[in-house]
Image (cartoon, rainbow, N blue to C red; front, side, top):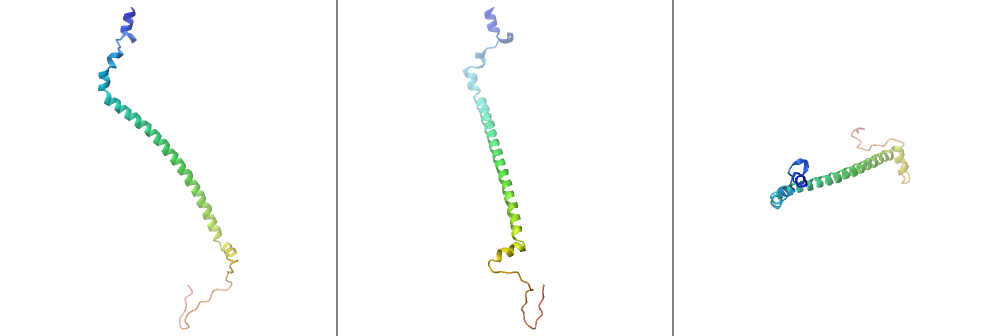
Length: 116
């Protein structure tokens, strides 16, 4: 009975590994094995590539947000400094002052001057 159990193997079927895994079968299936290996390598590469791409995207998004904050800060500072009152404070040490009277227009005595 022990020989019968060994022959029948799993679930009463004749299952011999030597029949399926011998030298000629392996040699015949080398192209398929190489194809599967190539697919596995491509799958692993694709996973690493997508992880790196995700990291780069997150890093770029952070950089863009920082640049947006910097732009808004600089823009508000420029708008603040371009006000007339702030400009007067800046140019006062140089000796420039605000005009109290309107400027005089010079021209020929015989021609009319447009004040546009």
